[in-house]
Length: 286
Image (cartoon, rainbow, N blue to C red; front, side, top):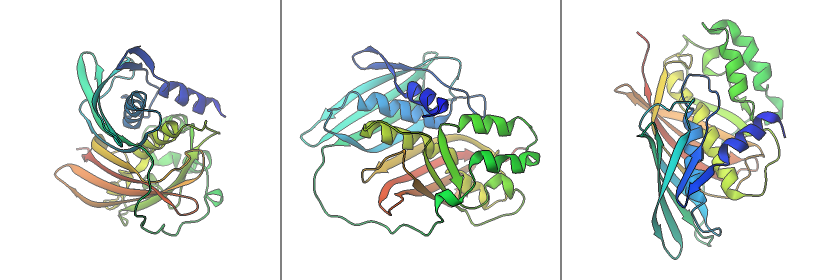
């Protein structure tokens, strides 16, 4: 396991300071604010640690309320909404400087049998045939106004092996494309057999590239995206975040300064593992 993944796992290992209260720290991000995927993953950790051990997360719905301060701890307060015979519901509020910055609702379910169908996995090349971030990003260093962006991106994503199927948005800035993109990803090391850890890692990564699809239709390079407004994830089938997952992303609409991204995440053998919907503030710099 590499050092960056160790640091990410430490980040997700929240400190419990009361029965339903947890505290987390932050890590460096590409921009000077807390990375949204980190807050969502930590909130899901807090919710999961108050749920019965035999129940796994099957959905989360969240809103990002304020920009997070990476220099201050984040306190997560869990409200135990309901413990039913099959489902457990939790609500989590993340607080910094006395103000809520994030709100999450999560549901957990005991395993059971039921009807089964899924959308078919789209075609995609073998992930091992694609360039790594360390190979890809330096090729486009001249596209960024800030020369430090490449190093910051590599550092921020070092815990995850993330590979673009097609050219990333910053590679085709100024040239509109179909609002759809695909990436393969997996943790950069072996993870423990803990289902909550795997869904939290996938939640963390889900925020890295989904809104890219909004920008592709307008030939934007990826830096016009503002804050995420809300995100929802549904976990359909068991998966491992340390094995290859295909993140198939598209944007059906952008308007009113907001862009919508929709995605499906598949295991390498074609099982639909996760569905994702995310809306973000997308403002063009004046």
